[in-house]
Amino acid sequence: MKNKKTKKDESSLKWVIESFILTFILSGVSSYISSNGVSKLNIFLAILILIFVIFIGIIFDIIGVAVTVAAPSDFHAKATKKVSGATKSIKLIKNATKVASVCSDVVGDICGVLSGAISAMASIRISQMFSVSSNIQFIVSALVAALTVSGKAYGKNIAKNNSTKIVHYVGIFLDKVKIFNIKKYLDKIKQKMTKNNFLCRIMTINIEKCDKNRN
Image (cartoon, rainbow, N blue to C red; front, side, top):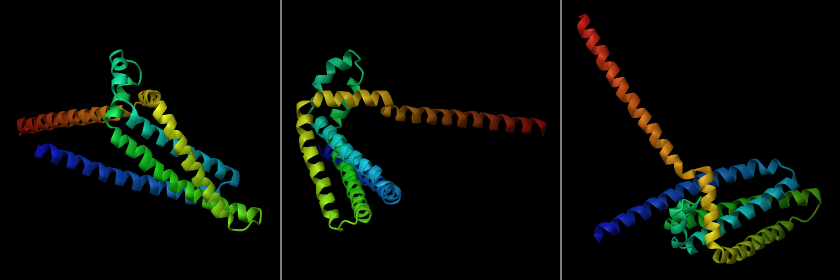
C-alpha cells in the first residue's frame, strides 16, 4: 500500500514539474510572439488573431471537459474492430486528468494571457487611429473576458452532451498526425545508435588485432 502511495506521489510530483516547465516555455514563447509580432501587425489582423486565440482556448476547454466525461467502455468495441481513433481515445480517457490539465489549464491559461496582451495592444492601436479615449482598453478587455467565459460555458454543455464524439474526433486526429508514435521513432534512433556503437567496437577490436599481427 505504501509503495503504491509513494509511486502515485512521485508520478503526481513529476506531472506538476512537467506541467510547470511546459507552461513556462509555452507562455514565454507566446508572450514574446504577442509582444513583438502582433504589435507590428495591422489592427484588423490583430483582431482576427485575438478571435482565433479565444476560439482555441474554448476548443481546448471543450476537449478537456469531454475527456473527463467520456467512458472508455464506449470505445472498447471500436478498438477491437480497429476503428480509427478508438485506441487513442481510450488512452486519452485513461489519462483524463493530465489531458484535462493540459487542455483546460495550460492551453486555457496561455490563451487567456495571449488574449489579454493582444486586446491591450489592439485597444491602444484603436485609440491612436481613431483618436478615442484610452478608456476603450477597459471595454475591449471586458468584451474579451465576456466572450471567453460565455464561450467556455456554452462549450461545457456541448462537451457533456457529445463527449464520446468529441474524444473520438480527437483520437482520429491524433491517429492522423501520429503524435504517440514519436516514442517509437526515438526508440528506433536509440537502436540504430547502439548498433553503430557495437559496429564501432568490432572495428576497433579488428584494428587492434591487425596492429598486433603487424608487430
